[in-house]
Figure 1 (cartoon, rainbow, N blue to C red):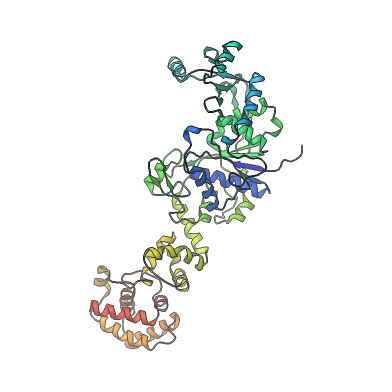
Figure 2: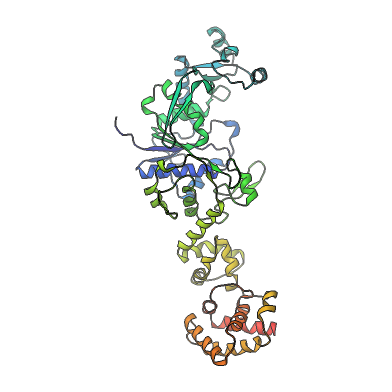
Length: 505
């Protein structure tokens, strides 16, 4: 058999914002496709018309683009296998539903919600399957004439797959190996609903994967119970030769305790669970996003890649090219991965350090504008170089560096009591004279001159430096004091020293 081209699909439902677990699924699909010179497809599975949320599809596409996960074909860009929205493929599915019905591998069911509820009350743990279907109102218990008459007069129905009990169904999973599930535990799932003339997920995704020549289905662990049904459908439709290889990814787990990661965990512990900010169109509720919280997309990708997979070595920082080269499904974990959001902050810090100062300056400019500050890009870049190692997020630069843009209007009271001595005003007055004569006004030279003066006068080095920092910054923080003076420049440095003398003496 010839080797099939690697074609993978990410197929979210437009029922709300894209969860971070879905982002990881998209990422693993993308890495696998790129490593194998394959295609990454975006398909929108919108067959559940009741749960459709306006704006969700656009959100998904924007999130993938922000993360640097462009798709090769799909919604928005097209391709040779479209359309890529399931709601636009209604007529395609009907042909295969008819095939299953004609081969006696599926049947019509006319049970109303009330009838199903009554049966659930009657039978504990009721399941619509081989043991109960002959008690229900369907084409297996009705005559052909009765069935045709119900359909003709427009009575709502569903089409269910007909599963025979007692068969071991094997799912060859690239992560979990041979998964065996007996057909007796499966129910006769609904494949098609006449009410909206749309298939359910189970039918639509099988037909689409086959027709779009998807060779590998990489999806979350929550879909593993559906895999035997999907294997059966491939067989029923005569497509066993084109059945994709499955890989079911481990769950993302709560940072603490047990269970699957949820939005409530993020709300409670203060981290996003969505890639972008999301505003609920019904309630107006706003949920935080990684982008708006100040995360760099490269950091989010690197962080997520290591939740459930490892490269086989101790390397943690990997750019996209390295991830593509190293990614291997066989190194994915079978067990869930704890969502360590603090590690996500660490990744963001590391990627900020790796960026050039001019890139960070461009990202920081909007924060300066919010503060009403105008500064040249060159000046901002210089400031960034002095403080970036102290921050995890771009927005934190303002807290670390605001004094470079705005002179202090007040002075930290605790620091004044501790660091401002009786002779500080007089000593800073002398320091002004020293600095006025200092040329060039560069960090290394200024430090040499000032320390020479302190030694000559036999002043206390710590007292002078602490009082100077208080005068320039207003608080006991900031980088090396002479890097501050060089950046501020001679005129601004002397102005701030003089103001501190006037205010504090």
